[in-house]
Image (cartoon, rainbow, N blue to C red; front, side, top):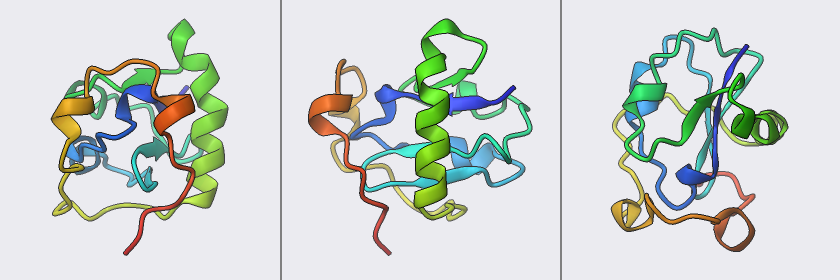
Length: 112
C-alpha cells in the first residue's frame, strides 16, 4: 500500500506534506508533487497535512489511476526534501479547481 498525490495538487504544490514525510518519498515537478510508491512506507502522516486534499491512500477507488502516474513522475523528477520551499504563488486560487490534469499539468521537473 502507498499514498498518491492526485490532480488537486496541480498548480498548488503546497509543501506541508514533505515536511511530515519520514522517508523523503516526495518528488517535485514544475507545478505539482508526486509520491514515490517504492519508498512510501504508508505512514499516512502526509495525507491530513495537504491543504488541497490531494493525497489519498491507494486503497481509495479514485486513487487507482494515480498510482502509475506517481510512479512514472517520481522516476523522472527530483526528490524534494527542502522544507523551506513555498507553494506556488497562486496556490490558494487553484486548490479547489477541478479537472486540471489535461489543461494545467506540466510534465517538466522542478527547476533549481
